[in-house]
Length: 419
Image 1 (cartoon, helix red, strand yellow):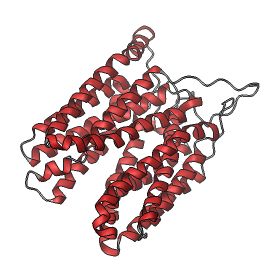
Image 2 (cartoon, rainbow, N blue to C red; image 1 turned 120 degrees about the vertical axis):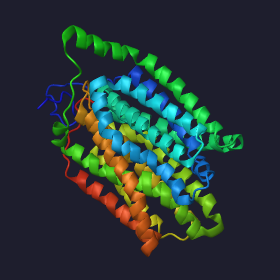
Image 3 (spheres, rainbow, N blue to C red; image 1 turned 135 degrees about the horizontal axis):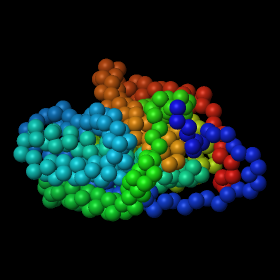
Image 4 (tube, rainbow, N blue to C red; image 1 turned 180 degrees about the vertical axis):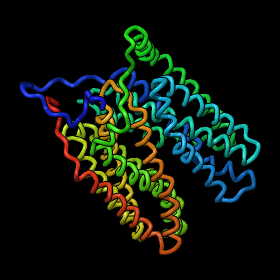
């Protein structure tokens, strides 16, 4: 078994007399943060248009929903391959290739002449998406100094959040251009982002190649079997699955339907407002979540954040007044924002600084994607049979299983970290 050179749970070294100053965020990670904003911005740009574009090919609502879910399904299926590619080719190569595949698929969607073509092209985008997602997480895990992993995770998550909030706003202005033009805009922006990342990460890529050529030593890869031995990794898989179910699946699919059913004519407006308010709460929590993670460890923010998110999800399906609906949306966003950076930092701890964790990151991504795929399906069936209240309650209760998984994780705070 390979020795993990840098984990959050490693024993504290004695004789460390004074706190160390915190290292700065590596340049390569700052580039990935900027690229993440562009990716999320474009995704938000086309997200409101995509279902409407699908129905323009004379298909029903169910078929239009498949266009949305095929992206996540392709991510789930291709995640193991992305992990292997990241291990073999290195993170920069896989990242740039993945972004270019998404760019190509997005442009092809703009040229689609039938529902089948749109389905195939959108599925292709899911393959590229998991490539750059897994490789980006692996690169961040490898290059993040242990002392600021939580803050880096919060910075990366925050860039995605800002893009997801700003994207739909731009999409509303772009709606007058028709269904196809936004796809071309997003595809072009991705090509520019891929070029910037390629040249910015060229130093990291050359350094890895030089090391392999001159010293016959490649970047140490963490085997999945070693990760399975870490309690924090197994707990992160559970919490990742439940968070994918609640935040990325049920909230995005059932909140709009519940709002229309519960608040009649105001439902459509409230659905959009609830999702926006959720993002605001998420962003507010991210401003402090990274520091909390680096100061108090990964376990505490995850326990607090996931508990808040779970309870708010369980309760929101029973409210019958607007103030409570909005309040629970904000609270849910805060809970998700608190746990996000800590969960990412926990996975980075398992991988360790300086190591390639493609397979490990792919496994975590699969757990999250699986939850976001089956969550809406099963919760939707429950809503059809016994109502929205029970659908949200079951989803929130499932989130508490993630809390339970983290209760048994023991960790030690790193020595010398300045809060």
